[in-house]
Length: 184
Image (cartoon, rainbow, N blue to C red):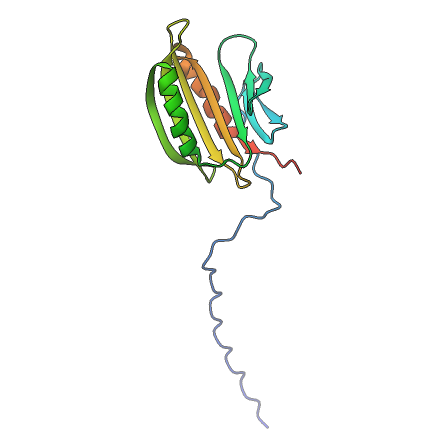
């Protein structure tokens, strides 16, 4: 009996490529934000973390707003936390603008629009007005969004216009380092 040569093995077919992208693991913690020099991360009991200037502390909590500020100057960050918000952030800002326009001397809208913040539907509102006591121009900006659990978070700052570049840097740092805490 003569041995037959082995049959050539069939060419393997290519491994199918998934048509959907893999989902992120629910157990993987989010990457820690980069905190610039002169700032520190704070973790608030209201369920969020962000970076503030090293000399700033949590000053108060009133009317669903938590204030972080330093001991000098007018600059501050306020974080509004509204559980089960019955509106979109954009709708809320449109309603608040009516009050601001009526109550703030020389109110001027710089921007107001819907946006996406960290993957969530949100809105941004920036404006100026004249301080009634000093007559100085005050600059304000507010980024808001509704989290998966229905909580609205609004990160807001105001400062005299002449110091706006420093205040805007603080605001931008707060946004770039913003994270929700798992309070369970």
